[in-house]
Length: 184
Length: 232
Image (cartoon, rainbow over all chains, first blue to last red):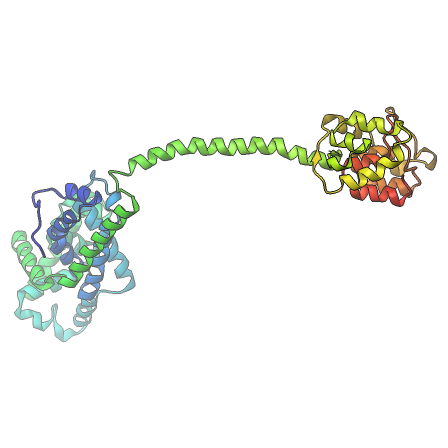
């Protein structure tokens, strides 16, 4: 990708510039948030092909609705709200492949709390543990850790109160520790 | 503890997720560029430039309502003219080439002259056929309120109740029921009156016969009925 200009401009300013027809502003914006959105989609769907489809849908929506974007809200909140709804729609159509795999393994008494292959790789064990979290807790955690959203933005994106979002994060970490303790 | 897990997770997630791929990235950026170009070409100048069109729309709305209101008023003025043609005959203008006294009177739309025609006994028999040939298919001009007033007095339902002896009775204006029906352009009543034996030649006090009135009013169907009944 070509070097971007005006990396110091804030997201909202870049959106306004793109809304006025500045395509390079969109490129700056895309590069800035590409990996955060990608990781969020990848973690939530557990499938690379699905994540790629959703990645396109999310950014197509951003480009399409740029003219209607109101800078009163943080761009990242708006961006991940779009992404979150795309994920929900996708999950309604198809169960996450990773989650199904984990459930199948968990149903096997010999497999233990986590896949044996992951016992030698704490990193993969951690990701598998995240995948086993209840959906609301996983979404909150992934939005915080992959998307770098603050708690109030997580509450907005997932459509819950600030306190609920905070509780989900707390429960998610507690459950994550339990799973990793079982692994250890 | 949380910080450790969070950092471990971030590193793990980044390592596993990788990147979306160059193809996906290229499609997204090309799509964004295409949308921007389409908007610019369509003149849909995004949010910053979209306000002026809205202001223009605000100007157009009153103009649109004004146009619709003018059309409605015009309709209210024009439609009654057509409705009046159904209830009251109009007098025909005729071709300059047929300038008999009768056609000349009709061409001038002179109701007074038409009424005066039968009083000129020598011209009256020739006037009806002249008007009959001249009036059909020619342009019309309304005789306005005077014509409507001439047609106002007849009660069609009374025809059915009228005794044979009363069928040619005249009303207060001196017109027969048949003449009033002709002036009104009421072919049904004309048919009914003729079937009951109404005299088709009885003119009004101004000398205008039913046939002359039918021809002058461009009522060819009624004129034909009258001729079939022996009107002259």
